[in-house]
Length: 417
Image (cartoon, rainbow, N blue to C red; front, top):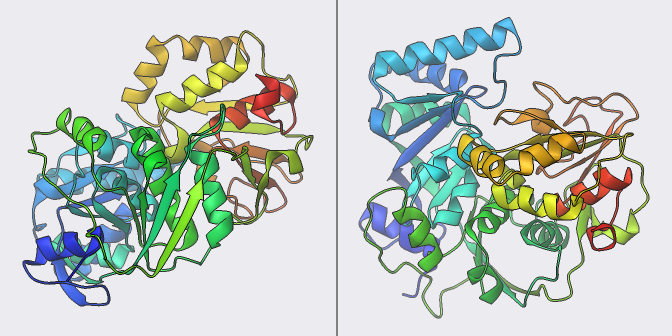
């Protein structure tokens, strides 16, 4: 029977003929916990009678949401996780490396054909590596820590075929926002989004990560890009692994098949307070902004900062805007630093922070006051997401964010650059 890539991954891991809708206990190749959800998962592990984790080498531990610790309670939780890591022999990336999803990818902890779970909804980012990756709750993670397996219902897939060439200053973030507006915030619930087509094959890994990262914003269980030469080049520089063929069969059954052409796509903006309320930048241009955040697991990579620097040029950011820039990892920070962009952003008036989640979840710093407006390259604009429930968060690409930071209001990067 012809199979989708997701059905093939589950078949490979279970050693049998698996189809969408099947419910199975499946071994996992990796399990990621961070400083917010990790303590809960560890407590559940103990509550289930756990003494030793299933395989310390398959557990990935990072601190990224509240780092460095911004309260005594946060410091205590991180201390608790460090003690657990020492006790169990788990290598702990701690707060040295950056945002969990970026670090998992760049350390080669997710790869084609693998099943990786994380106690964070944006674990679906790793689908850019050709893995089936999904977020799970802390109770499920406690079970995984003990047994190394978890029950899954194999999801149906929605095929997303993407063709055309992106216009200047338009890219992966604009595309995935457009898809979110099209499918809706719950239009892909418990399905996998399979990204394919010429525009995806020509997209760099940073763009693929952006697309897969936001699959959850449509309710999807996972996002995935079939591995190709770009995937294997990325993986090969991070871990020894022999390339193999992994793609959906011709004639595989999909729940839906959607086609997009990005050739005429304009910069997109998600309007408060819903991810699927997406409009062209022209519809909201001129809206004053108080803060611009360029970073997060969605758009905190070198390629994003390079695009922001291209828009900025030799100008300064508006005196009326607080600009916060946070590379997603130490690796991305160093690339951005060595290219001279960090210095350029600081000269232009930005505050550049060490790799972490920052304002994305409104947990550590960069919070908004009532009535303030933020334009962010992150993935969620729910009410209260970045501070006050009376504030507003718009979502856009790094290019649109930089243009808006220069103009002091939401602006089209094609007109500002």
